[in-house]
Amino acid sequence: MDVQTGFFYLFSAVLLFAAFRVVTARNPVHAVLYLMLTFSQASAVWFLLKAEFLAITLVLVYLGAVMVLFLFVVMMLDLNFEELRVGFWKHFPLAAVVGVIIALELALVLGLTFQDVPAPPALTGEAAANYSNTKELGILLYTEYLYPLEVAAVLLLVGMIAAIALTLRGRKDSKHVNPSQQVHVRARDRVALVKVDATGAALPPAPPAAVEESKA
Image 1 (tube, helix red, strand yellow):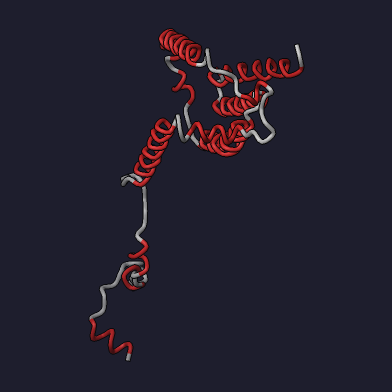
Image 2: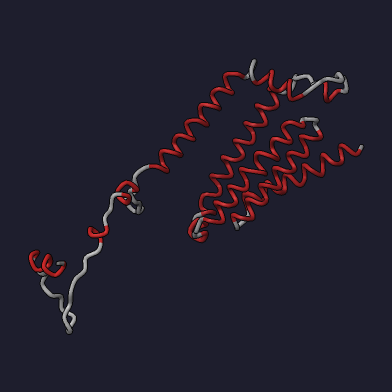
């Protein structure tokens, strides 16, 4: 076994362990950290497969942005984890059956789809000096997989619009101010001076004529 194969088994073992801990960790913050470890090991495996563009994209986009946002949101949420764990073992058999079915479907689809696909030149050692897997990936995306790419873009756009609509919807439990009303406000509309006697009782307001004479 050469060095590259040894690193592949090492990265794969850590990846599987981290992925298992993502779904079994009791603390959601620990689950997010294990997910970050999973992505880093997947990026290392892609480096071994000479898919540098995908590996760097996984590190920069997911580890550098998406997972930091996930970690921030999880740490800011005040969740009652005891209530979330209620009924876990009750629904575990059904969840296990569904998971096994999904795993078998993925194995069947991937096995039949990529069984006769030839290895790219970058993996067989036949690549030219100016070969770029990023260029080849772009050619595939915008030729053979153009329609799936457009469908994914539309789904992301719909999700973004839905998130904005949910954020900007009118909520009755939130307090907000109108800046235009604040600009046009006057002091006499907000503050009223009331005269009181020695006992603290409010005196009746003076008639307008008396107010004018006092000012004079």
